[in-house]
Amino acid sequence: MNSAINETKTDKIFKVFNYTFLLLAMVIVLYPLIYIISASVSDPSAVNSGEMWLFPKGFTLEGYELIFQNDLIWKGYLNTIFYTVLGTSINLLFTLPAAYALSRKDLVGRNIFMGIFVFTMFFGGGLVPSYLLIKSLGLIDTIWAMVLPNAVAVWNLIVARVFFQVTIPKELEEAAEIDGCTNMKLFVKVILPLSTPIIAVMALFYGVGHWNGYFNAMIYLSSKELYPLQLVLREILVLQSMTSDMAGGAISGSVAEAQNSKEELAQIIKYGVMIVSTLPIIIVYPFLQRYFVKGVMIGSVKG
Amino acid sequence: MLLDAKKNVRKKKVKKILRNWELYLFLLPTLAYFIIFHYIPMYGVQIAFKDFVPSNGIWGSEWVGFKHFTHFFESYYFWDLIKNTLGISTYELLVGFPLPIILALAINEAKDGLFKRSVQTITYAPHFISVVVMAGMIIAFLSPATGVINHLIVALGFEPIPFMSDPAWFKSVYVFSGVWQGTGWGTIIYLAALAGVDQQQHEAAIVDGASRLQRIWHINIPSLVPTMIILLILNVGSILSVSFEKILLLQNPLNMDSSNVIATFVYKAGLLDAQYSFAAAVGLFNSVISAILLVVVNQIAKKKSETSLW
Image 1: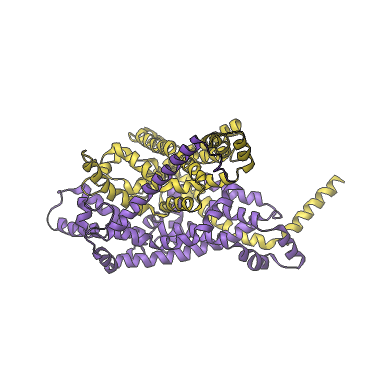
Image 2: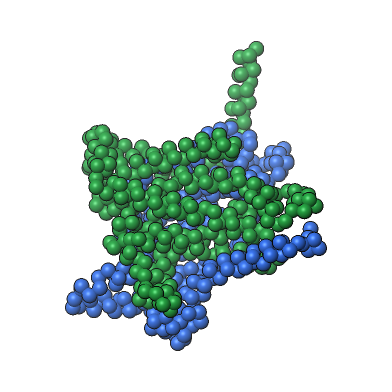
């Protein structure tokens, strides 16, 4: 459709406005991101005094050096990688087979199962009963508290189910049945190889969730050796600055000194840790983008 | 005869179930997960009506009726919590709901492939920033002495604003940081709906001399209405459960007046102060109101537009 020929004046004005609007949206989103990158390699005093606006000023990698020397960050990083890999594997292992089963029209009782799952989207026991459950299961302060409570997300289950419904031709299942292929074989040998887009989407969504999650860790973990990166970041980015904003000059002596040196450290590394913690997602994101848009669209339009 | 037919249907069903036994095996772990991690806590919610003593267990603790609920309703912070929770989420709804629609309509009009894709890639990106990093960014950018936003305000000749310690600013900070992070991602679902619009309608409208704005108004927006209604219902249903992870991270004693919401209150009362039964009662109050809101809005939507969740 080429409408350039009969473009009227109002259409042209509209076009200009539209492109300006989109450009503005891009700038608003991009500016803080570029600012963080620049600030992470700039002299902290230039950043704090407002001399640095867009491009790095007083280039230094000191912040990153400190980050890489910090044991807590390293440990948190490794823990997060571990939780993400283990958690995402569990997610996929639970979600994909169930979603496939639910996508089959010949599954007796699929609506009942769906109902049981969907109901939890709208009503739940809440924070305290969930916490008591995890406690009585003996999962407090174990790695399982990080991966089991979120083993399946209903929304992802629905998206995956719709994907199987829309993209897997029924004839394939019928043919397999006539050939005497079992459902298990069918799923592993035929369905899964055809489903890379949805596997990628699910892995990305669940993986990002594990990578970015802090709340479960905050309420269920008490030993620092198990802390994921986000919880370490919380101490650097949120708790530090709160005490500095709050306490003012009220603290005295050695406490203040310890606090101050910690604070200075936090000042230097705060932009760096934002980058370092988000880096893996930034790296994976472009590769998976074409998949996730497709996956979300399939799930949302026909769901 | 009828009985026979019924028997036949049942036999067929049993046969179907037996033939697909593996599919039930596929469902089993997920079913077990939901029963253990979602339905058992629902059973556990009864501690809201009990004086829960951990050593006695959920079942063994003593019933006390609505004691914890009345305690909550009569407490001095009750109306503050309601006001903050509703205030933040309606604010968020009013600002955050229309923006993805507008952005999606605008992106949809950008026919140029590379530019369009750049806008999408860039505006989606903040969605993947963790809530902790987001909170860190907000605190760093808004700091009165060192934040870039206050540097700008000062450069323009105004007084710096203590965003994070002034309760008057908390709601706006929360809502607009959410807009920055979520608007781009929120367009995906609308763009999908727009991609489904019949091109013939547009062609016919062009022949009739419709301008682009007219076509957006009369073709594109109406085609988004069902999606809008579904998302609106879902948003209203979660109006009492504002994403409290971010609030918790941004909260400090100075902005407490406007940042204390039901969810953060439950967290503090339940997990930090171990008032299990009381916090469970507050949480239950929250979920019940949410569920009622959801049903009511769904019903209204069904009547007015024939689009609904169920």
